[in-house]
Length: 257
Image (tube, rainbow, N blue to C red; front, side, top):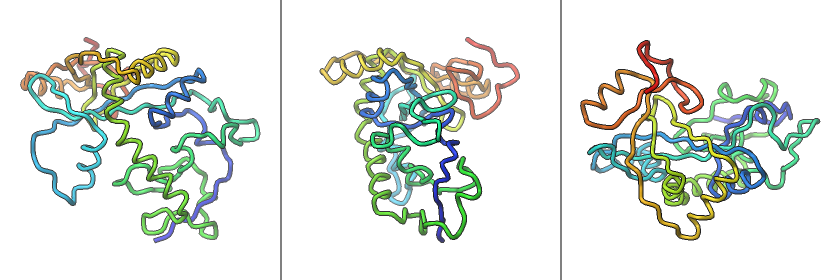
């Protein structure tokens, strides 16, 4: 199966951003005064062997760090995401990128899929229909990027997501944050001022050691909160908003707490 594609410079992918960055890319983005948010989700993670063919579980293991919520083991995936409402600060009036040579990897590989177990689906991308005409250059062949350079960037992005795990775990300690959402329900979000993020990364790189806070879970589903309470897992009921990106609507009885 072949998927053809060519950028139309419509600029749709450069608006209302949430771009997954490596730690190094996040530092550069924040140092320029741009917003970087922290997003966290987690999975209960019993001590069980992963099947070699389970690509999803192997990826989750490689890109997460272990914590304990109450007495229950979890794995936490932490993402650093560039966020900007409206146009990207680097987008020029003619829809070209003003940061083209130094743009993050996630921009370089779009619309390819960044996660190894996900299928790239044109219908889920922001590009207009004419960007996918059959006569255009081949973007992907049998799920593999057709261009060797693009394939290498995808692999570099994935490698960074793995290599950054330890740094991310120390980062959340440094900023004093220890909340996650249950994977599949949404993402816990922490806004942090750009200068504060850069200072925290500096402290982590200097080897500053901060004791970990007890981890808890935020959810907008009363059924999830009740289930976690039975397991004696600290959980906080919230409403969807800036601190919680929900995959589902709030449970009817949800309130902040």
